[in-house]
Amino acid sequence: MTSYSVAVVGALGSGKSALTVKYITRRFIMEYDPTLEDVYSKTESVEGHDLTVNLMDTYHPHMVSTTTSNSSSEDYLRWAGAIIVVYSITSRSSFAVAKSYLELISQFARESSRPDIPVALVGNKVDLERYRTVSRHAGQELAAEYDCHFYETSAAEDYGSVEVVFHELIKDIARLTDQNVVIQPLYISEPATQTTVSNSNGNSHAPLKRTKSPKSADYFRVSSKKDEAKVLPRRQVSTFKLFNKSFKIFN
Image (tube, rainbow, N blue to C red):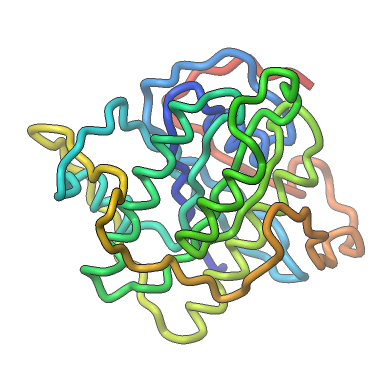
């Protein structure tokens, strides 16, 4: 079975773990340990093709100004076929961290043989619109600066808008795979220090190329034959594995 890998990054409190588990389970988690880095595996059907999606919910507690990424960051960048950068629309600081991640990914793309890594910038927690501090326009502009997909959604609400983020990136990976882009296996090692790149502030950066350029901030309907598939026992329709994390999951 074909397997695709997606890394999810973002500041603590951005809701990246909730977004990841929402996609895996269709449920919203309220309480979890944000300090644990974990890998999830889910099997499902996208556009009529059965596949396995491997998701890494990363943990990087600090974003330190430097010109060199740390070895842990390089590990997940090499491993991932696509990357989701999450921020909370209620937090300017998480938006700044998201920009630092985009710059880090841009630097990696510039220095590696993978200039076309599919990337999505996701503004999470739109259910908390009354507390918004990051405008939708600001998110659109940042995504345009790095030429990546842009979405606003909420892990607490509609599953469809969350699923679309992952499915569009999976389809991007599939297109790149057809062009014989090799994704390296993951070998994680503990770094001695934790550093990452700063915001671009006048520095040049490579655009994060997309194999498909959707309209910014639009929700897409994923063309899928999943609903037409033969009905299987519930436990066989979608399977997933969770390691290490402890959750409280709510319908």
